[in-house]
Image (cartoon, rainbow, N blue to C red; front, side):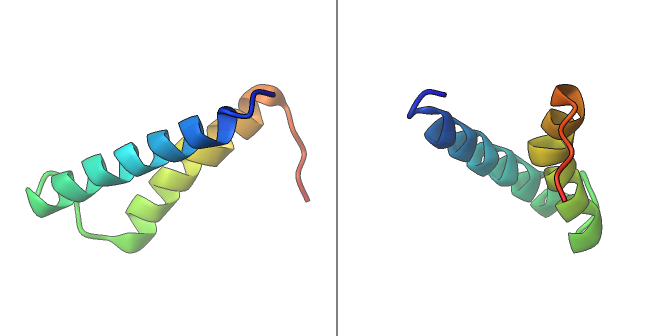
Length: 57
């Protein structure tokens, strides 16, 4: 792994959260912490975990 992997992921996560926050403020998606939180978790973590076939306990 490159030492740049974490900063790239962090930059993506911050950009995603800013985009979702703007969409919530504009009324495009509901202001529901559980819904948006699970969406961010699935995009940033679960998709990669499933793609790579990882089992994390």
